[in-house]
Length: 330
Image (cartoon, rainbow, N blue to C red; front, side, top):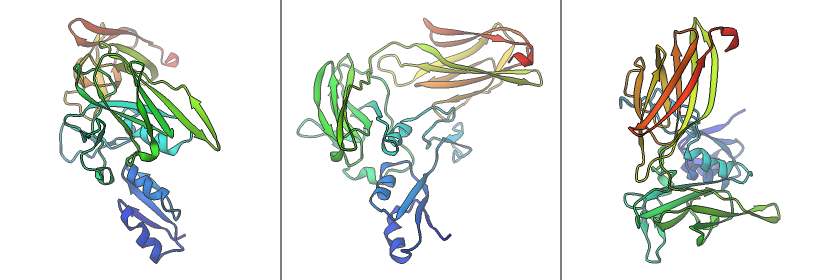
């Protein structure tokens, strides 16, 4: 079957349809941006698109060592969900989904309007966005009074934002050209909450969905642990960890080390795509914003080990690990 396919050429869909009206058209390599999908929604003769990429692309860094990949995926190198994932979930699924993030207005793509709201500095800038998204945070920790942009991804027709139980207004999705809800909020300690309205078929359902972002100190916790079968007497283990930033900090410096065991970290996949230290040393320092995946290998057949995660002199988390000598038990 003949198919017309384009890579990063949504602007020629209409031209192709005019000259090859009987052939199906598809985007065979597209940017992870709203304007790519909007072009499909507006043309019933375009079958769909393929995003580049689903997972951060390991191997293409344009010589920018120590960057080892291109952070353009919906998932990071460890398989964790990124903001882009949540955005596309709101446009590709009917399941109610809402995601909130924040960033200082100063230095952002936004500016304050005369009415006290925020808008893009360049009104049509969203139509030319490429692979990268502007940086934002998953915390609510800033200086008192600092002007903050609150962005919300949602497939709800209406979203209402509350700050410390005070409504900051209802926004309509149909009025958001870039498909992103947004508010201007002067920072004050407390919490953000969302109330969303979903339209299912011809009925309207009021959902009491709440997504809270509270200021907190750093903490570490293990979310998931998986032990894999060792090969050649090499035991492997994976630790998925999470962290929240301390106040006024976008990134937290984390030091990982192994104690009570002759071991070395074989790899460390992060929310970022950088890894600048040798993987064959017993301790590594990285900057963590949200989650990381630690992969460890040791030649010791059995025993106990401790993975120490240090964020500061007075803040650390310890995870006890048991190494099983019998490979059949792993």
